[in-house]
Figure 1: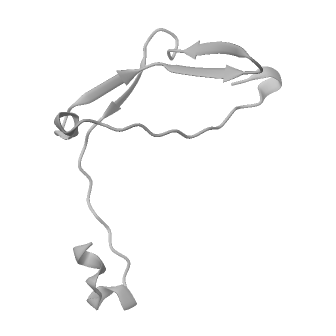
Figure 2 (figure 1 turned 90 degrees about the vertical axis):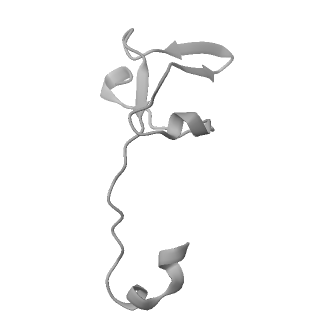
Length: 73
């Protein structure tokens, strides 16, 4: 949470090597950002941020897509 109760929201992406796409694999990281010429780091209060590879059910919309080729994309 930022100053005066405001939050900063941002998105980012980074490539993940294929061996990290195995179920249960984890990536730990900290975030570096620059604002007005100053550099800042955030490591989630010394716990690092982490992503865990998990599988999930694919939910297809019902209706006109049921018989389309979208299932094979």
